[in-house]
Image (cartoon, rainbow, N blue to C red):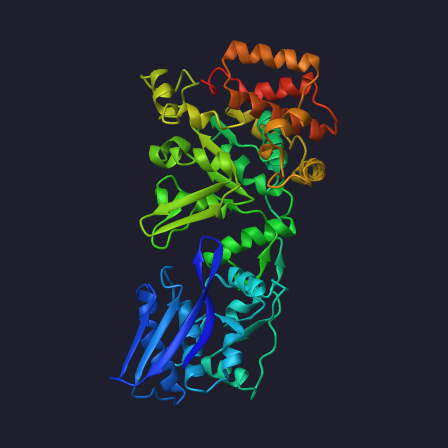
Length: 504
């Protein structure tokens, strides 16, 4: 007789169903696990044996075989402990077979039988709901899984709780969802003295999810501006919050099962490896670009990142997803993020200041910014120079609108886009639109079209740059509440695209 339980194997944000089969047959005493397990799964037999021993359950002197089906799917992680234990308890007739087969379970076992929280409870709950099964998981992981209301989630503290629940001695209550967190930003745009043009670029980028690069001398306020971007972005929609939380669940970043409505803001150091930025490593885990999904990826000291790392950003920026390909795994992750980059104009940082520039100026500036390839620079919708702020400006009172005022305009512009794209799949903001839809919604008036064509011819703009200018112009019109794109909108979009020093 073969007993069965069910669990999942993670491939990206997808949780693939796995059937755990247990056979107890005559033969020399042995406990083997087959079905392409990794080291952590193979070690489950020792954890399961010790957990059962702590409950005074002795394994029979027979051959125990655990098969993880489908056998050609790699199985990784310690969350296979609980489903293996459930299948074995069912084979020993300690818990009913129909109860074991009616649940998707995952969890790591301690040697004393207590359940340790694991990553991926939220995607596992999605799979359990699709299979019309209950999800059984550690109590510490149940709050995040309970956000999937299409299935019942049971959180257990130990293997003994599981046995008593399945046997009907002490049924466990259904888990409740964690808190919805929305952490307000304490950084306000009014803290930034001057830099009105940079603030305007930040507002446009936030409204349409446009990629932005800021180039300026050290201390001009580039990082300070980027740090205030979360304060002007609208909260995540329920759909976006679920997408973002599934990635965070795989990385164990959900705090006490709570789902955050705040948009991610990731700022990796320039020494980060390609696997850390794009994804990869053992198990092909998500990288910073996926953790920034539906949020912001801020890359300070942009030219200091390795060239190979920068070049890998080109395709994800265009497609909104990344395929992490390794010898034993091909995993796809979503990564629809807004890239905000900051860079000095040269190695010493003072290329534009004749009194402080090094002796290699202006060659040092060309060499330094030359680390950013033309195709990558072409993908930035907004390019601005951030000039140094004078000491006299620092004594002036705050100027311009605060974050709350700018956030209201951004929220209004995004609401216009949400209504515009509600019937277009995979399109949420103006930065996503392309093809005939772009030509329809962003067609400028006659004067605007004439200006754009002249600029394209004079500055040799690529087709990608031409379309990105149209997207930015559409966002500027949305911020103004204008139904059509006019010449002033095109002119402002061009001003952020064409600069003698930034666009070179």
